[in-house]
Length: 164
Image (cartoon, rainbow, N blue to C red; front, side):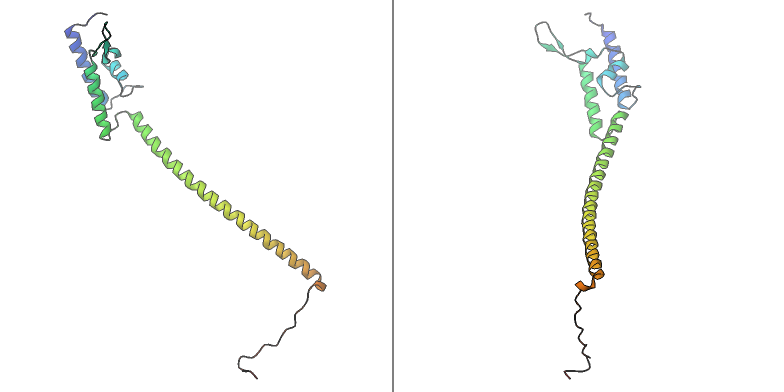
């Protein structure tokens, strides 16, 4: 692979820095994200320049633009730690996750309420069935007066009559 000239490297670094600033402002291209792939595409350089290289003896050396990739990642993390979301898709994902957790909570509360009401309904229906059975039994008993024993009625005592 051919080495690039100092002028080309300086122009590439300038293009990468300009692309970093654009991406971190949230000026993302259509279909792009705040990542190294989009950064390389915006700057017009290959993505491999952002990663370390291996020498023939197996040792590693930094890629020509690795320091800029690290700067990009550091600035992106600082923005995220400050609560600023650069990528609109990340903001949408965060919003959807929050809405999803709220909906899960609401569904859990509704499920608990439905269970509570179902238990109440079962209890109420069993009580109504028991009362219906008792009413039916009493109606049958009234239909056959020979089964009914009338109790003698005692005269009530007048509260004004004391022991007389």
